[in-house]
Every structure is written in C-alpha cells, then in structure tokens.
Length: 92
Image (spheres, rainbow, N blue to C red):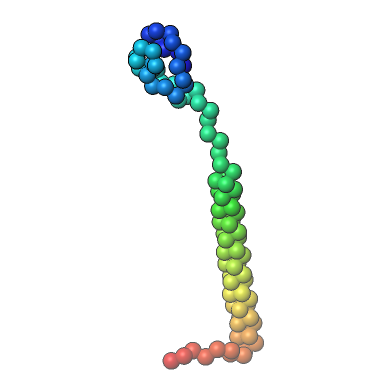
C-alpha cells in the first residue's frame, strides 16, 4: 500500500506508514471477493426441503386412505341396513 502523504511503499496489512507514521487508508470492503455459498449449507437446505415434501406427501396419502376407508364403511353399512340386516347396536 502506498502512503498518500509521503508516497512510501508499505505492507498491505499496515495501518500506518512505516516512513512518516501517517494513517493509511483502509481498503474498500466492496472490493473484496464475495463469499461463496457453502456447499454444506445448500445441501442442508435441499435436504430439509426434501424431507418436508416427503412428510407432506405421506400425510396427504394417509388422510386420503382414511377418507376412503370411511366411505367404504358407510357404503357397506348402507347396503346392509337396506337389506334389513343391522350390523351395529347402539350402546346405551
């Protein structure tokens, strides 16, 4: 890094000029290389999303299966009671 006051060459990490002692300008942080996203973070995010989708799919399938079983039971009861056969007695 070059000192603006005396134009002496200094190390890049120096905060003050080694020749005249003047404070050196700090580098602009925007010039630094942008951080790359971690592959681990990206994979973890994809994994969490995948697990959430699988859980939601299982839940929807299970819900639809229960609804279908309920409908089948209602149809069966309606057929049996229509034929005069009573399958269930009401508990007192």
